[in-house]
Length: 301
Length: 267
Image (tube, rainbow over all chains, first blue to last red; front, side, top):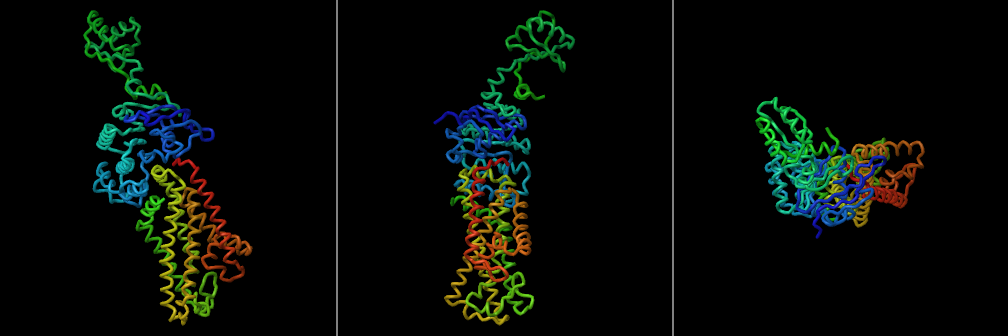
């Protein structure tokens, strides 16, 4: 059995003059929570649809749970998916919508009640879908994705429309599923959310993969920064002079000096500041967060 | 395919759709069957397009299902609308992607949908036939129509043939409805194009050039329901209608199956 839940090689999708996905290559290890991020129109949903056999790639290949996406019937029984928001029959109840999918997939319909409770829709399962709020629709979509007790869960923006409590519940659910061995491949525009729950990340920009791998590796490759505040704000200029003399890039903003440099240089700076008679109020080595890294890599704001 | 069939029936049996469709079908069944008996002596006719159906026709062994045969085309149009909407809504609601994730063999999914449609059509045929025959029996005395031959072996044979013909006609209409739903991906477009063609354009073109009715799909399906052309200016044989109608249906089946199997599901 392959150790990879998803393995994508040179996957490309072209529509006339538009290239939605251009030679995407990445992999997702089994049992990981992998974030899939990129600006709107980067090709995330197109990639997900290709992985689910809904659209045919122009070129390239991909394996899901060790099976080629050319034969989706070989792996989709083990995959749960929420694609581009929930989509159900408005005139059917939430529970009946799930029963349609359970019947179609050959899953026990008894599981429907259990899932409705699990996603926090207990007491509303027998109401028509058209009466649901956006958050409730999203919860039903997640319940539908969980129907097959999946080995791989593919979720496209699962926290859309959820309140903070709902977001926390989804986060806990995904972590629980991952701890039980389910691979979770989750796209989201909430980068802070992805940073909290994911160990791996695939970053897309204009259809191309700009990074794929562990988040830690991505952030470690970014320039570390030391943030300095001084007891006397006027001393910030002196700190900048010290850092610049040592060859570090400095910017002063919001009453803080941001010095690009390795974290172990913080101790040296502390010593030099003391020798210069400067009292430091804060000395914090930091790594750029995912959001900053994302904007830097995808050319955003 | 059985899983698809049962999943489809979960959608088809929802009360608004199921009872709404059957109520409409039974309303028209009752109305048209009653008209034949209640207007039997009307000089302006008692059947479609001003035709007269006299006692000499209703007294025959096939009399019990004469009313039912005349509404076959209308039942077909109702079922066409239902299945055009059901199919196209899978695209507009975006539910097709859920179905294809659970059943990625697209032709199996489509065949399951057709199987569910056929049983729905069968149920509609049987219930409408029952209601039409019951009304015919109830009104026969009042219209001074003899029922003596209706339940002889010839009468039962006529009932069986009419049931089969109406069923074939309804299924043919429904296949066209499903095909339009797949091709157009919009319930409003699929239904309006079908209705404008069958109810307006075919009749308009036929009025200007009657010979064209011999080739019009809607006219073939209605002719099948009636077991052949019931008279009028143009005589269309049952075998001609069945052959040509089957041709239209096979073409629609092939085209829609190809598109359903190959088209990207991007919404």
